[in-house]
Image (cartoon, rainbow, N blue to C red):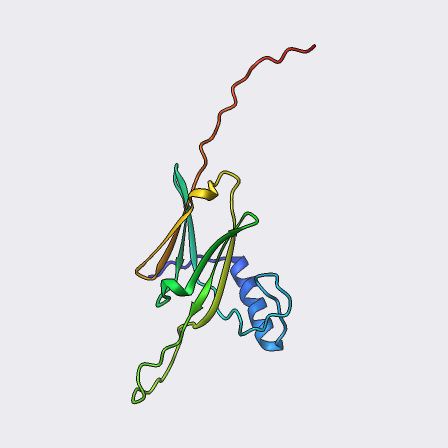
Length: 149
């Protein structure tokens, strides 16, 4: 038996994607006006975890080359975008069914306040992009008495 996590937000995203595809209207995930529905065709799944030292974002990007992925930090947001290109295997091969997603993708995540943006690093291995977001060293504010003059 497979465990599938239900997400009402994902259902809403799917609804809006279907709406965009059905009526050809732009509801862009980037906030940029008037993007065609073909410009962002799929959204790779991402897992976010945390340990004592860092936050870890893992995005599933099967068959996406490193050079086709861009990871940026802007205005307190982690942005992952790129393209999964369709490559026809050979002329004599007949495709019966394609369920994989191809085309451009975009994901954006708000960064917590305690991320050290200067030390963020990313790596890609076995179709998984892993972004490491180190936490800043917390400064504990000790209680002290302030004299009133």
